[in-house]
Image 1 (tube, rainbow, N blue to C red):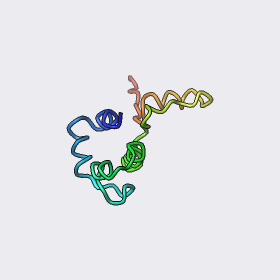
Image 2 (cartoon, rainbow, N blue to C red; image 1 turned 180 degrees about the vertical axis):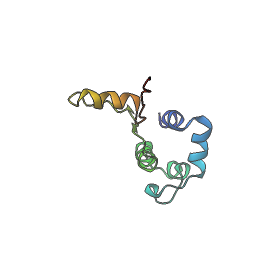
Image 3 (cartoon, helix red, strand yellow; image 1 turned 90 degrees about the vertical axis):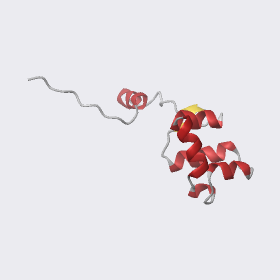
Image 4 (cartoon, helix red, strand yellow; image 1 turned 30 degrees about the vertical axis):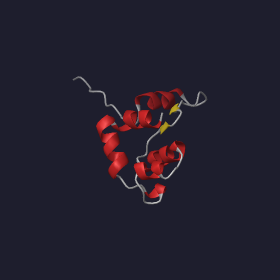
Length: 90
């Protein structure tokens, strides 16, 4: 599940590179591969990845919007943080 999430987040080739080369402070200055080899849980390593790369994805799946939130907030969750501008026709 961990590698599936990494591949979804970064793409297969880049996920492998991030895991091998990127030193993460939340992992005590280790890479993802080193942390996993040292016996850190995949869940704790994924949490560090999410913090480091500001990822909204949890290990168990993508976050679900709060049903009590306003509709505009739920829609923004579905399309991400990208803002679209409509073009005005003259």
